Length: 469
Image (cartoon, rainbow, N blue to C red; front, side, top):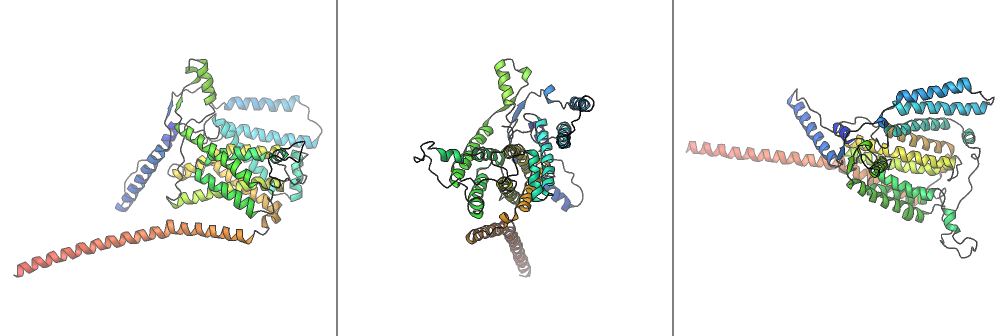
């Protein structure tokens, strides 16, 4: 699995180590620093218990080098060839497209060799740097589309593919649910083939990969249920009235989450022992080592613990919200830009989020779980969040009527009730409960103090009475 690969255990141990604290200043500062050091040590120990142990012989071959000069030389040779040896066509549209593509390729070459590494290193750090640069290019493309009119934006899609820019035909996913239709002698299984467009297998693979990203069964099920029943089936019946929720929940989402959890169990138990390719004597071992290059270097088990503190609770809520928004964009974006589900741009977007989503989730988890050594949100997580928000803004601008259509009153009540329950539980768990606990501790402390004072008073009275007698 490409998206679940990790950085070296040595680097992670250095990153997750505890820092020495200099206890200076007042006693209050010393106590505060001691408490912070104790908390950091506890977090580090908790983090170490979720990380797999890695054994590596430290082999560093030609494959792992940066190759910055090599890439620069090849890029320069290509530009020299285009400038001196190739005749420029007299076609303005073609030259414009080629110039844009060449500019993007030069930027990708720079980013692959010079961008900062992320948390993943398999199959190669350059692979993840490439997707980081693709994220920048995609965000800039979305910003460009956002600043166009609806007509110009859809017309611009024709420059990418002349087949685009045409309204989508209506497709029925839930009208006739018969698996075998005896009335159709030509193809009695036509309902299956009619409904099996690109998104049905993509849903299964998507939820399988999302499970590998989130690494938590409860969060995946919450997102799946809210997404299927609340957002699509009920909250947006005017747009997605053909959405086959039976196929989506039972076959696609449920089976994908189940297979993902099985894979997570295997990855958490798998030994991570690495040896250089040239240090392996047999050809069978070399082939096995090449295949394992596309598997994780190490494994970190995600323990979200949303109820432990307010920071984690808000982070989990934010993750669920962004996942729901990204899934909503998947359906709305192709709807407003008139892209059929089987178009290669739709599938490329899914491949894009598969690669950037895993890195983004790992960066979010590091930022949330180890804030002492990850003081800012990771670059891929930042870009993925910006892309998700920009896509939704495009949907709002290009088709605001669909977004603003009235929701059934009963569904509105359910959404309001859910939000009120979340807000109430948040206030009780992280504010009212803590306040009550502090008051109780203060009362117990004051009660103990008064009890000792009363005892001392009785002793003094007894001594005074003895002296008087």
